Image (cartoon, rainbow, N blue to C red):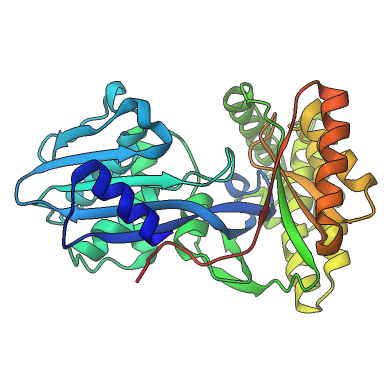
Length: 384
């Protein structure tokens, strides 16, 4: 792939002697959904497919960017001293936002560069142009930024420059991923630890419903507000800062404090889902992939019944996966109302699983789902 991306660069910008190639993985959250803003843990991993970039430093302050995935937009150009979020620059605003944020924090970026990007990443698996840009510039210009600080800067770029109120999970998993390991991450403290995920005779399959999640943004704000109301009522008695501070037993003993039954359901999901991340770590420590699979199913059921963020397409894809003999566990992943599921299936039956689930999904929904086999890989890095 390094040679392919280098050839793409030379096709667009001409031959150079100083072309450097980087890779930034996609990510998937295996368990722990809608827990980050409730003071809980997430459990993501980096994937073996992602976004590739080639870069070559220039002698002026011009930056030229080209993406094979958005080739109709051609080369997008701007000046390092004029970093603004502009609609015409489309996808390039994400890496541009990283440059803006690094300069804002005092890092000197005085020269421009030419850059090409190519991604073999499915929708919903975490496009990683921000993390890719951060690592590229840090390494090529020798800025010496600590990786976790770089992750924070990438999140800040998306929050403040782009205006997307995302948490830090995506950037952390993409920047800090480790081969054959998932990351238990406390999104508030950024305390983290790696958990070895030995798939052995199983594989991860990402299923894309191809349903665009149009309701996600408004419903996200709604769910967050419902959880905040539940927390406020629990705090009339309990000394807690987040729903994630509660054990299942503590929640059951005090749930009567939450007056609204809808808010009570939302809070239940946040508490129980956070505990599932801890149980998942324990299951992996015991090399118990089947218990891990059951936790995935419990997670989806909670997202469906208590948090109500799934929808027909996601539920159908998970139900069909669980009906197949290959499946160890399956759940929706992400914000919900569309996009992706993650399943762990037996490797020898993977092709049968994809064929059968795909056929039945199309018959029920009316259009096809896409499937991607994924291995757990490392975080963003230079390809040497």
